[in-house]
Length: 242
Image (cartoon, rainbow, N blue to C red; front, side):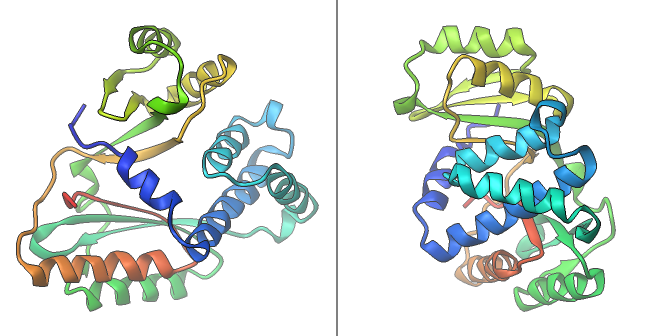
């Protein structure tokens, strides 16, 4: 596993202002709606919904908000018409950026994403132009302060459950899985009462790009900030070494 700890980013994300928290709850709310539409409102029989609930809890979403979202989605299955769309493109100095969106209007989303790239002196490319530079993995991050288990014991538990890799960082443990094994590994840890700071299927860069000049850093931040403000955008992956 690379030496890039995701934990610092998670802590930063969770310490953000209420507007940022509201955006995260909106993102998770959409994921709940899509999961319920695809597999029903009972988490016992819907592994995708179980994964989204785990993500919601990791982001401190209150249980009643989660339950309300499930009930709302179950009552409005036909009203949920989100489409998943992915955009790939380049930021400054050839940095690679992938944008996942859930939208009810693809034209609006495409225009907004293109605008974000253009304002940061980047450009949207074709499907597949940068995704080959990333590996799709299940990633589970555990705060050391929240975990009483010995590192070796935790590693063996994760590997026995089907994890591919385990790394101990300064203040966290990071577990990687194949996407198909993610749910099983996450649920095995959950059964043992392991609290997760983050748990999701993500795109991990194979290599990172360092930006040194202020103009490039300003431009990539502009792209990422504009994407972050867009309600249709669910997730942004990039290989900039922040």
